[in-house]
Each structure stands twice: as structure tokens, then as C-alpha cells.
Image (tube, rainbow, N blue to C red; front, side, top):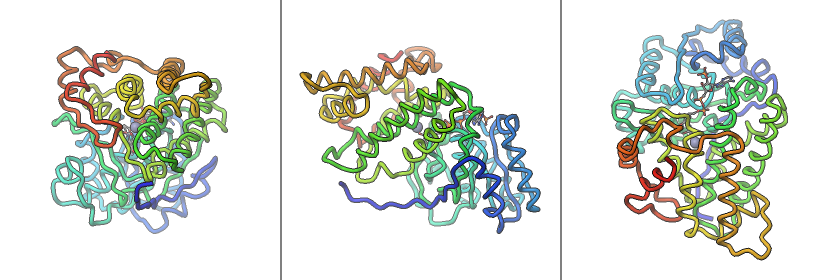
Amino acid sequence: MNNFIYENRTKVFFGQGCVKEFLSCLIGRYDTILLAYGQGSARKNGIYDEVLHILLKEGKNVVEFPGIMPNPTYKKVMEGARLVRNTGADMILGIGGGSVMDCCKAISLAARYEGDAWKNFWERKGIVDFEPVPLGVVVTTAGTGSECNGAAVITNEDKKVKTGYDYPVCNPLFALMDPTYTYSVPRMQMVSGAFDSLSHIMETYFSQPDEPNVSDEIAEALMRSIIKNLNQAVKDPRDYTARSNLLWDSTLSENRLIKLGKKCDFTCHLMGHQIGAYTDCNHGCGVAVLHPAYYRHIFRDGLSKFARFAVSVWGIPPEGKTQETLAQEGIQALADFIRKVGLPTTLRQLGVRDEAQMKQIADSCHYSPGGYRRMEPGEILEIFRECY
Ligand code: NZQ
Ligand code: ZN
């Protein structure tokens, strides 16, 4: 394994009833809480009421910050940061999925920083040598794993860039994860979230080193778990076992654990983010469209791993097959799964308008140094055309 440092400061409270049981004792030392949430689901499904009731019972001053959009914008971040400064909020509590959690992390950073936060923390990886505003999250949908990392993926609409770095100091202090809170997530979001988690694992698994390492073993177990539990949750969205597994799979996929000792690729994420910056498409749907095409481009550069993926993750019998055949069958199984669960398969479905826009997006993409090989100039556009 490559050398690593491991840190994760988020304390997780997982399971049915965890908000009622633990929230009051987690907010004891704070006076004014910025209560941040999305565009209405938390109010509809009762989670907002449950949380607000606890905050008021504990005598907290509550500052409302509603309306965080999917793919949160830098403008929204700055609006939240101003509100924190103006009200003297000493804690942020987010209710939602990756978008709310990321926006809250970004607010917690920007509210305590005098300089140009975008330039110094999003445009390039900076050093956070101060404590952001304390943050807690109530997770309402599975997928990004944002609750246990320090990344805040933010869209800068003016610059047409969607990006974010993982700053360990920005990890939420606590995450409350009640699987029953995810029952009301619309089917497409449930599926795209699960695919996002799967994508985080694949983007890590398909990178050096390929010598035996425990991170890859955990990755395979997680991929099998997501596939099995998503199939079950599609059949019965209120299956507690399936929803609780999907929720924890999602955390484990992006809490840095499986990245230990690995280089990590994340090319599909870099491409997906830029498609999102131009079209505002759903994140999990974006990466779902890209994965099979990208893997058909690079599998020969990591052949043994792609063959192993076919056997260990999809259960494809290896007897009498070359590594090349097995690798291709594994990628096909992935593509079939994407179709079967109803995810989109073309860039057109994501809202990409035409060839000109496709080229503009391709030109704005960064290249990842961590994959099996670096994309050739022009190859990203080729992949986009294949997905169009
Ligand atoms: O806005 P509301 O009304 O809350 O509705 C949301 C939203 O429309 C809805 N939803 C959430 N929980 C629900 C619910 N609807 C009914 N019942 C519930 N319990 O679901 C929709 C999508 O929510 P969103 O938070 O946008 O989804 P997701 O969790 O997939 O987050 C996506 C964002 O996270 C970023 C993505 O780029 C994207 O901006 N990511 C963050 C990462 C991280 N911090 O580690 C890693 C990921 O790779 C990703 O980039
Ligand atoms: Zn993702």
C-alpha cells in the first residue's frame, strides 16, 4: 500500500430514532443555530418539524436558511456566510443530502474567512489554518457520503466551474443518519444516489496500486452491497434493511477509508462536474452516463483489475475466458445495471444541447493524474460523443 494519513472527525449517530435520541445533547453549548435546508422536501416529510421542535425545546435562537438548491452555487454559499456573520450564529445545522451538506460546509468555511474564499479554497487546494463554524448534519438521502468528509462541491455559475477539495477540518462534527428519513426520497434520486456511491468506489478501485490491498477488498464488498441493496430498495423502498445498508454504504464509500493507500482516479467525476456546471444535471445521473464509455477507453491499461471486477463484483464465471473478454463482460454488466435501474445513458438526457456545447464542456474539463492512464488530448470529447 502507498503511505497515508487517516483522519475522520465526524461522529456518526446511525439508526431509526437517532435525531430524537441524540440531537439535544449535541447542541448544548451553542446559542444561535443557522438551520439550513433544501427546497421543500424536509418540510413536507416532517423532518424539519422534528428538528425545529428539538431546537426550540432546548431554547436555541434559530436562524432559518432555506432554499439550498441541488448543485449549490457559490452565490448561495456567500448568502449563507453573510447570514452567519450578521446573526452571530455559532453553529450550522444542515438538513438534507449532499447539496445541503456541501453548501453548509462551504458556508462554515467562508463565514470565518476574510479573503477570497473561491480563489483560495476552490480554484486551488488551499490550507485551512482556522476553525470553520461548527457544523452538524441530519442526512436525508444516501449517495454522496458528504456527511463524513470535508469536501464541499460548489458550482461557480459566473465561471462555469463545479469543483471542491476535501479539507478534513471541514468535516461535520456530527452526522445524524436515520435510514427511515430516506424513505421519501424520489425513486430516481434514490437510484442516482446509490450509483454515485458505486461510482466513488469504482473511481478509487480502478487505480494503482493493484497489488493485494485491503482497500480493494473493502471496495468489492461495498460494490456488491450497493448492487444487492439497490435492487431490493427498487422493489420495496421502505425495506429498512436495504435503505440502512445503502445509507451506510454511501458513507463508507466517501469517508476516505477505501482511498487509503490508493491513487484514486475520479476522471468521471471531473467530467461529470463540468457537465453539471453547464447543464445543472443530477450528479449521480451524470456519472452513470459516463462510466461505461470511459471504462471502454481505459480498461486495457488496468486489464487484470477489470477482469477481477467482473468476477468479484458481478459474479461472472471466469472459466475459459481471456482477461480481455472478462473485462469487457464486467463493463457490460455495469452498463446493463445502469439501464435496468432506470438511470440515463446519454448526454442528451442530461441536457447537453449540441456538439458545440459538448466541445465547450470537454475543453473546460481537467485531467486526473490518478487513473490507469492519462486521457489523450481530445479523448474526453470522443467519450462525450460516444455518450451523446
Ligand atoms: O431540496 P430538497 O427539497 O431537500 O430535495 C432534495 C433534492 O431535490 C431531495 N431530497 C433529499 N432528501 C430527501 C429528498 N426528497 C424527499 N425526501 C428526502 N428525504 O433530493 C434531491 C437531491 O438532493 P441533493 O442533496 O442534491 O442530492 P445528493 O445527495 O445526490 O447531492 C448531490 C450534490 O453533492 C455533490 C454533487 O456534486 C451535488 O452537488 N457531491 C458531493 C460530494 C461530497 N461532498 O463528498 C461527493 C459527490 O461526488 C458529489 O460531487
Ligand atoms: Zn459523486
